[in-house]
Picture 1 (cartoon, rainbow, N blue to C red):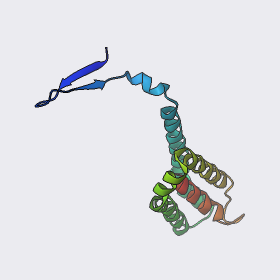
Picture 2 (cartoon, helix red, strand yellow; picture 1 turned 60 degrees about the horizontal axis):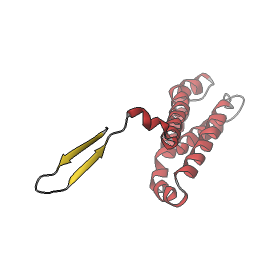
Picture 3 (cartoon, one colour; picture 1 turned 60 degrees about the vertical axis):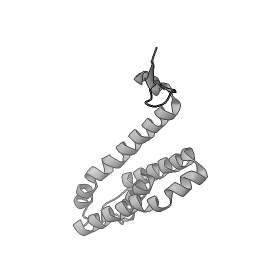
Picture 4 (cartoon, one colour; picture 1 turned 120 degrees about the horizontal axis):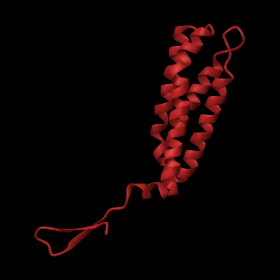
Length: 136
């Protein structure tokens, strides 16, 4: 029946532990939303991060500039940790997740619109990766 009864030593009460099938967890919308957002975040974060230094070098940017971009990305990833908890408490997980997704989209768009050194500035690379970091 999916219920296990356990006798607790030195007590006369019983504890009921209810086990549900693993697949029932995926019928819950909050689990599906969380899984979809985590997958979305991983895809958008891993794709640009795995290739951006090579792409920046191929477009004429220096190795130092690509490393600075990476450092700013890490700053964008970890600095929100100082205030994200209070923001989640104040606004709720849904609102913060929505704005994180918006920042991801802006970061992805900025990276897609990035140009080479002779045709533009590294600002779109830097801002795109900072937005990805903060959205993460």
